[in-house]
Each structure stands twice: as C-alpha cells, then as structure tokens.
Length: 286
Image 1 (cartoon, rainbow, N blue to C red):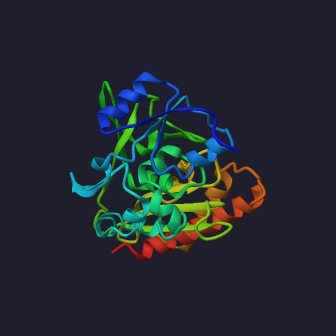
Image 2: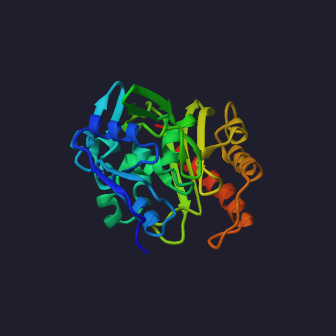
Image 3: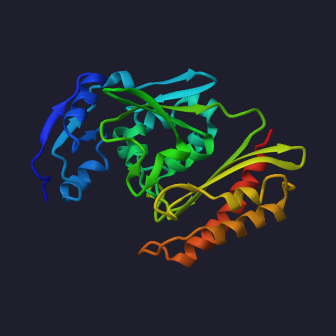
C-alpha cells in the first residue's frame, strides 16, 4: 500500500518545526522514519501534514551537561551506540544498544524518535526510566521538561503535546559505585523484546540502598513496578533477595499474550530475567 495524501513540510530550524506543529494539530514529525513510514504505508497513521526534521543538525549531538550527558533528539542510534561519552556516563544505555535494532535501522533511526514512538517493547524507554532521564520539549510557547517516569503514557503515547518537539534528553551520570543490568529475550537479536528487564543498583555495604527496575514488552508501555523495588530496598544484596524481587515481578505484571509469547511465558521471563539482571548489577557495584 501507499500512504494517504499528506502535506509535506521540510523544517529548516527548530522554530520552523514547532511553527508547523502549531499550525496543524494532526501533523506528524518525520525523523528517522523507521516506524512512521511503515505505519503510513499501511494507513495505520494518516497525518494531514508531515514535518520533516532531518535538516535539524542542531539536534544531532552528545555532550556533557549539568552533571550528566545531553543527547540531541536527532542523534542517530548508531552514534549513540558508539559514543565514548555514553559508555562513560551511562554504560547501561551503551549495553542496551547491543540489543537495539539492526545496523541499517540504527544508521537511520533517531534516539529521540524512538522515545517519542513509545513502542511498549522498545528498550530505550525502559533505560530512560531507570536512569532518571529527563525529556526537554519545545513548542512555539516555550520549553518544558518532563521526567521519564511521567513521559510514557501507553501504546505509542507520551506526555508530549501535539505542538511539542522533543529537542533533548538529559541523563544523569552513573553515580560512583552504581551497578547496572540489562537482559532481554526477543525472537531474534535486534527485534523488539518479548520481555526486557533493566535495572540500576546501589549498595550500602552488603545491603541494597537503592534499586530501579523497569520492564519492556509486558505492558502497554515500559514500566517500573513498586513491589519489585520494595522487595529490594533495605534488603541484603543476595540471591534470596533477588529471587524475592523476581517473584514480586511475576505477581505484579499483567502481560498480554501474542504470537511471540503467551502470558505464562512472559511471567516466567520477567521472574528469571529480574534475578539475573540484579546479579549482574551487583557484580558491577564498584
């Protein structure tokens, strides 16, 4: 199939882009287009206006900023994957990129576009949740920031308003001594996850001081579950505690069934991967 008719606007600046969004509530942004074009081709999405932001080189960067790193929304996946700054300040994101998409997709797709697409099985939203990322959104009325915990709302839904453009993602630097873990099961490496589990862990001696655990592929969006983190905080950082957190995950999630995996399999994966990522995170708490 072919897309439904649409008006094409090529933005030359961020101001051009937000002005185009303000003019048409039904406009869609074209960044990498790896998901949007496919959805337009089958007419799952039929925008009145397509605002092409590929000329916005000002949004293509990775830099140190305010005690962390700032990633421009138009930064391509492959650039994020290979960035020494990402590896230094957010090694969890660097590790996750070994599982994200395939090289052809990473060469074209963008970091910001992936977050705004908010696919429930995408890895980047889960990483954003556990690293405490902040989204910087711009409209013709000004800028605002939204924490990752408040950004992802549902299947392909975020807190970004129709007239807002994601311009930057800010990620705090990994605190000294914090461990991290990422594991997923997917039909093939590079495909979306049937279940992915992401975590960060900080210890106080042999006790879990703080833990953030997020899941992808098991709900309508990437999510953290309070019972899982409560099963860890203040507890001994040992196999029994990690097993209890896994059991809490099995109970807390409410996964759907599809042709990739049924509910029972996703519960098993969530429990098993939770134990494993926590053990991996503990080993990195140095």
